[in-house]
Amino acid sequence: MGQLKSLYVLNLSGNALTGEIPSSIGNIRQLESLDLSQNHLSGQIPPQFANLTFLAFLNVSNNQLTGRIPTNTQFSTFPNTSFEGNKGLWGPPLTADTVAVPPPPKSNGSLSNMNSGDDIDWDIISVEIGFICGFGIAVGSLLFCKRWRKWYYRAMCNILFKIFPQLEQRFGNHTRHVYVNTRWSH
Image 1 (cartoon, rainbow, N blue to C red):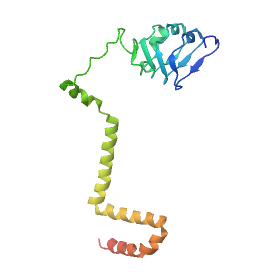
Image 2 (image 1 turned 60 degrees about the horizontal axis):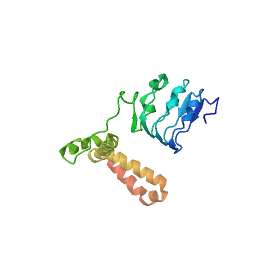
Image 3 (image 1 turned 135 degrees about the horizontal axis):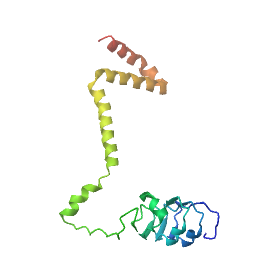
Image 4 (image 1 turned 60 degrees about the vertical axis):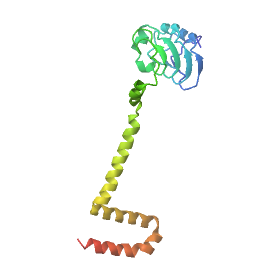
């Protein structure tokens, strides 16, 4: 690939590529956009990428890259989202310009139990709470508000009679009679 002269955009994202990133990509001097995200690439970002002076977009996120992010003017302008999802990758813009120190191992003592609350997925919990509240409001209004309950019963009967006309022939007159009596009893 390094022999290509007029390549401006290279998008190889989501292709399950493995191995190291070819350093020959650094020879494509006209490259303006490079997307290698969502693959299984490993190793370091080649230092030859510092030669890509026209590079305006770079995304190597969600791979298995390690080592320090090369430093040059282009790499310092890319957002940290361009490098996220690579646990072994460090350096600006992801981290400070120091070597990443692995976290201490967790013990089975009380400290690990104290931090277990950090793993709560609030997106799922908020959906569950919203469902419960919505369901409670709907059912509660039908249980405690007589007018809504009657309206709901009428609406459901009308819908069922339109879907199943034979039900109206069997029960239609009886339910209408009940409605007439309940409507005038106010």
